[in-house]
Image (cartoon, rainbow, N blue to C red):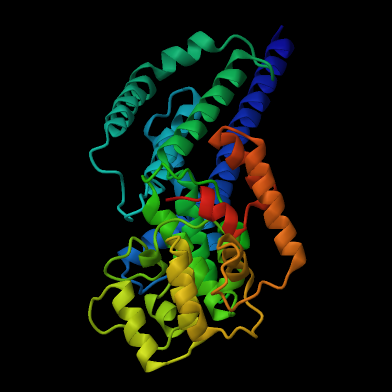
Length: 394
């Protein structure tokens, strides 16, 4: 009997160690991937604001250091209560710190102040403290039936770790557009203009709750394209949110930079405004300083297109492009919307583009409901100015 009991204890010890190391592995993997692959740009923005731009956040080093720190927190919590307990519960403070650390809003405030769900978080924390420090040993004895991989203890610890991972994800910043914005700013700051995958996202034109992040993404994409002279060619291939005033981070704009230096945005145009002014005022002044500059012209022309002011677009076009120039794609698409106006000296000169626009019109005629027209035209013509003009955000 003694030999059997010894074997049973050995098996129990092996199981307990395996279960504990499994929890450590799950937490470490989740924390690192959550920080490195998802929340890194948000933490970079948070650190940039807190340090006033003096220090910068490295995604890899930050993810490793924070994960190690949170593991030390778990060890400290475990050390405070040395009796047998439900092991996964010792990770709750680490998950809570991880959740609050990544609970950064678009204004880069540490937490969403006075939000009702933080009261729920506080209540859960109180319940955890009671369970862990007062009832833990009794609960452990109650659920400990047998030592095997499929024991109640295994599933309880696995379920608790899963719930705490879900809890962290719900509390942390999950705003995809804000994440895209921060990723774009990080890439631009590092000199990388390859941001196409971040500038196209679903945005309901009736939803204005996140227009600041959406318009900031549009502004950053316009800046990226202006540097390469591709603004008139590709601006509407990304999601365009806001008005023409939002194409530059000025006094009347909803767009802004957090990590990326605002001066870099104006450097492309030639000069930074010395006093607060509107976007229209700035473009008029900079246009006088650098006449016939196509980068400035593209900002003006694309601004008219963003606001759907086709008449003003046509009036402004001759100042920057002659009738013999090959016009950028979106400008040719806009001219097709103008129809056969005899006073237009510009010719699209693209039979395929004209055929595509005719097909776009035919698809619209094929459906009665606006929602069907929007969806069906998006399937083939998302990224064209025609689709933005008819169905883009307003």
